[in-house]
Amino acid sequence: MDKIQMVDLHRQYLRLRPELDLAMQEVIDSCAFINGPQVQRFASHLSSYLDVPSVIPCGNGTDALQIALMALDLKPGDEVIVPAFTYVAAAEVVSLLGLIPVWVDVDEKTFNINPWMIESAISPKTRAIVVVHLFGQCCDMEKIIQIAEQNHLYVVEDNAQSLGAEVLFADGSRRKAGTIAHIGTTSFFPSKPLACYGDGGAVMTADERLAERIRMIANHGQQQKYHHKIIGCNSRLDTLQAAVLDTKLPHLDAFAEARRQVAERYDEAFGNDPRWQIPVRASYSTHVYHQYTLQVADGQRDGLQQYLREKGIPSMIYYPLPLHKQAAFYGFSRIGSVLSASEKLVQSVLSLPIHTEMAPEEVDYIIETVCNYGK
Ligand SMILES: *Cc1c(COP(=O)(O)O)cnc(C)c1O
Image (tube, rainbow, N blue to C red; front, side, top):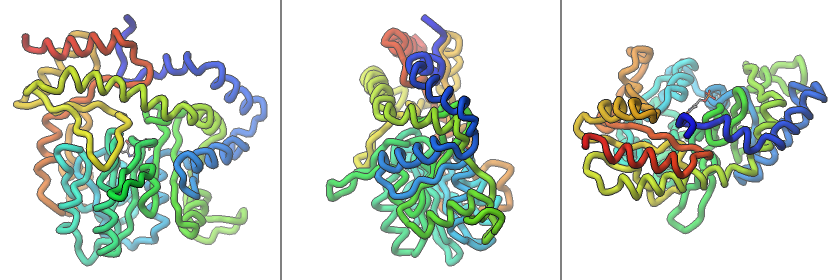
């Protein structure tokens, strides 16, 4: 058995190598490294897949969030609600733009922002909510959109971890994560559900006016070359990355299915053990299992991680510190709700290996090893 990886990029490359090599070689032969035809081709394929009118590729997922917030034309000092338990990117760009992050707790079961705590966090300065579809599962978008509409707030969906997941609405309809709010963003970082071989990201929207602004902002605030209407930035998806992504996009649902099968085996093996809680599937979302995250009870998490390391099984703590306790934000943020779930989760979460190339004997070994912990 090879060394077990959290994400096995090499094995996936070997499996898809003929199509990937062909696509990459085509870009190199053309030397159209920036703005080659593959970039728009990929954007239009992703737009069809997601069923959203506009997909604007950009340099990475953090840029995508920055561009999204710049497009909303917020004023310094405006408040933006963000979850306290998540990756730093959303809160970071909020601060960079002179806006104030307002921390709201997550639901302990789903790891996603708790809609019931959003309302009390809203002040006269609040203008937007950035929700993050964490670990492969969507937030409760129906409830979030309802609160946002009642309070005239923009909503941005950070969908770096859940591309391909679907929100299930009460009326039976379903829509892809990242296409429901005013703007959605994603990342194509090599470990993400749809991954390139470097940096990449995209912004999506159904609002044509916003789409135009987003395109301008990502391209130095210009529509016509050397005529800059607004302050923008330089954020591009390069052609090689677009070619890799366009090759992988038709496999995206199969990637999710492969991870789902691993998750089902983990669920079955770990589900009835009082030492940990398996990931909860929300009724309003499908799950693409970007991560498989256990909550380990009674301070046993670090012990379990150390034991797994000794047995050659990697695991990760996403995330070890809630954002309201990060030094960077001291004095530049506001607490919007009790944050007890976020504070508890950082002590208990442990993400196990899950990826598109896991061999059945690797899953067997991980299951057997985890179940034997402390025995
Ligand atoms: C990875 C990630 C990002 C940032 O993406 P980059 O491409 O690394 O800039 C933003 N938000 C979330 C939730 C992420 O997981």
